[in-house]
Image (cartoon, rainbow, N blue to C red; front, top):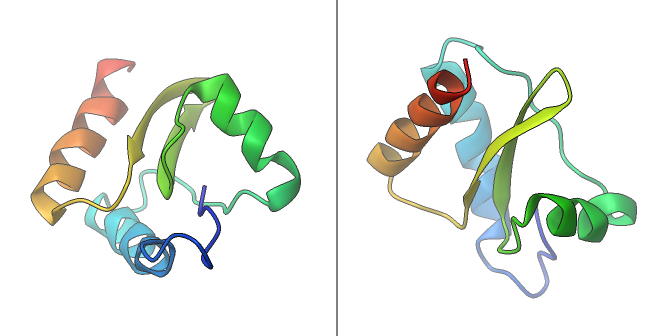
Length: 87
């Protein structure tokens, strides 16, 4: 969920991080950007209230989220945990 780029200066950073993260995990997941029409309800449903946020789903089940822009090592550790913990 990108969040409002006019209010959140980290939003453009997420557009750079997400494809790099996907490549680091050898395309183990697909990416999509949530539109404004459903962002608020999705944030509420997943309790991922801070933006930008990367939400992970498998076959419709919510696995976890990484909220806000973080250090690269944190992304790697959190993504690994999310992708394997619910395996």
